Amino acid sequence: MLERHDEPGCRRVEVTFGGQPAARGAVSVVGDFAVYDGIETEQEFRRRGLASFVMRALTAAVLEDDVRIGLLMATTDGRELYSFLGWKQLADVFILRG
Image (cartoon, rainbow, N blue to C red; front, top):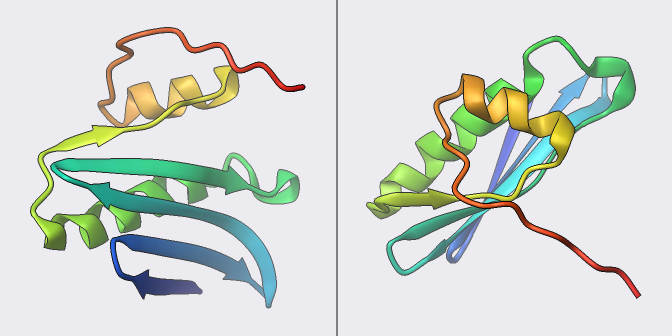
């Protein structure tokens, strides 16, 4: 089941399976940019196409805001998925946690 939550400037989707959270993600609108965040699939639901489903649902939702450019940061594991969906890598990003 797909649930969509709309807030001003932000869309969130969550996929549940048998009442259990399976995948989720969010996209915010900043000017002409759609900024994707928190695209996650629970371990037991991976390799079923749910992350692709979440990305497509978020993109469909954010197109209502007439954005032109998408931005996301991906883990090494997620890079293959985003490449499959047509995203192009522009730069490497390093995140430091204190």
